[in-house]
Length: 382
Ligand code: FMN
Image 1 (cartoon, rainbow, N blue to C red):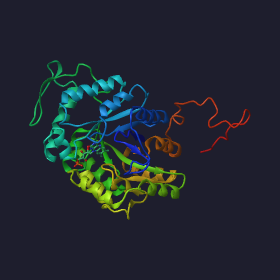
Image 2 (cartoon, helix red, strand yellow):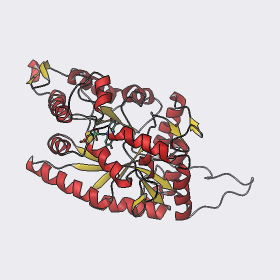
Image 3 (cartoon, protein in one colour):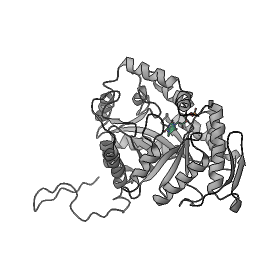
Image 4 (cartoon, rainbow, N blue to C red):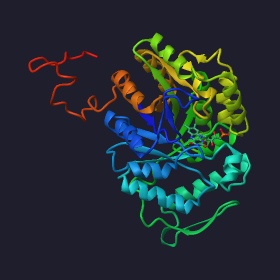
């Protein structure tokens, strides 16, 4: 099981929908979250992309030097850059970080946002562009075309003699992750990506998606890996966890929910539509399957569900998804710094994760606050 955390480049807070308890997301804060994730033993961090975030590439690059093993899942938006530029950025990042880049291919589901960025294309055209972009991206990083370089003449993208003089560390290229729930997205992922990502839908819906993706991939003679993006609200008891979920949205009122949902409804993202359908814009029935809570999605676009419960419950729900074929869990909690610690402290031992458990960190001194010169903290058995 790979466990990733999330870098909150679009803001962070203790409560949703209010500036109360919010914090400045500047370099020092991102550095704290990244260093925490790295030292705690998370496998990687996801950086989102879009108008509402700091730029993912610049933010991730700034954090290479302060982290040691952490991988960066950085978004590429086909259509906003040429494949040649994207290839060079990826190869350089991978070289400078010594092989710590993962690519999240984000086609985008908000036409107005994309038009503001200069991309004028319908949902299906955007997937055509992504398809062509990835063909060029993969071929040129795989060295296709040899010394003469790679040529491609597509409907949207044409390149002549594409070459990568400074190749990435990971061969043939940093792994491609991808999320998208429309039929066009599934078809593209089946043919071209390495890891298919879904937002945190109930296990039965995730099982259907995985079955569909596996069947489509098989037609191309391929197999895929799978990942899920979820928030998590874990506390020592179930009761405390559900109380924390209520607290998280205590400043969210019906007016704010209606405005947020109206804004998300303008998008043409099938994934977003599926997220919104889970709660229907209402606060009264948010546990949409056991321990899966849709409260975050009332006012947050994209990933809108959280696993809620005590450590054993959360670990068991994760195992349920793992049994379906999910290998990578991309998690987050508010605020992201404290919750990265809380999750690692409470759930990593149950998952066999963490630096101490992997034998990477050898503890040579007392663990916990020393009580006096001759009394050390009791050694916990869990
Ligand atoms: N869309 C963004 O605009 N920015 C992101 O950072 C982003 N990250 C995503 C992460 C995950 C795990 C998933 C599943 C989706 C993400 N998306 C993001 C949305 C998809 O990339 C996709 O563009 C959108 O869902 C529209 O495609 P669809 O209609 O096929 O669902």
